[in-house]
Image 1 (tube, one colour):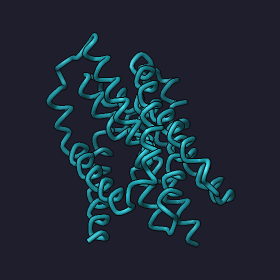
Image 2 (image 1 turned 60 degrees about the vertical axis):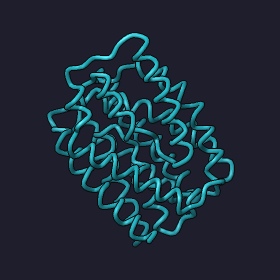
Image 3 (image 1 turned 180 degrees about the vertical axis):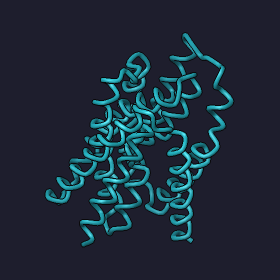
Image 4 (image 1 turned 90 degrees about the vertical axis):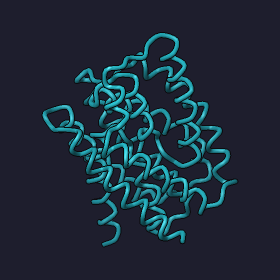
Length: 249
């Protein structure tokens, strides 16, 4: 029964995350940790689901021409290097400290999802040329380090960054999803050498993730208002952050 609930949680979560340009690891790491997994194993599973969810959604977004490859490629190169650095430090940082970082991250991202202050502030401001490339390179490196360290794909940082650069919410989410595939893959490779997975469970949750992302990406690329879902997701992140912090006290 517990396995069925896990599969259903992954399915419904992937619908929302695929619409927002997030792989979902920011949710999956604490979720699988609470189910009894070791933290490093939970990070590895979350990164795998990031890859599956983002890949599934990106197929749709590429067809709809929502992905900006010109900004995605340099970001991917920088983040791939950063992911290896972050993965190295994962086993050196205490579990409680990692979970605390997660809670802070969830609060920051949750508030941005609800209030969209960055998007409102930069909506009419364009950043171009060398300044744009510099922001992308530094941002990619930082996102890569966080991806390897915390087991996240970085979409929660990539989307606000793309909004800052002047992209609309749908293009930002779709491009973020494409980038997340590669940041997650780099971090997953760094972690997978010590992973001993439950193959049957991995297959079930991967199928659930793929199917949910297909549904979510179709909805997002259509007439669904991403802003409404973004605010819902923000509330969920704040509730999860409160749960993590209460467990650490």
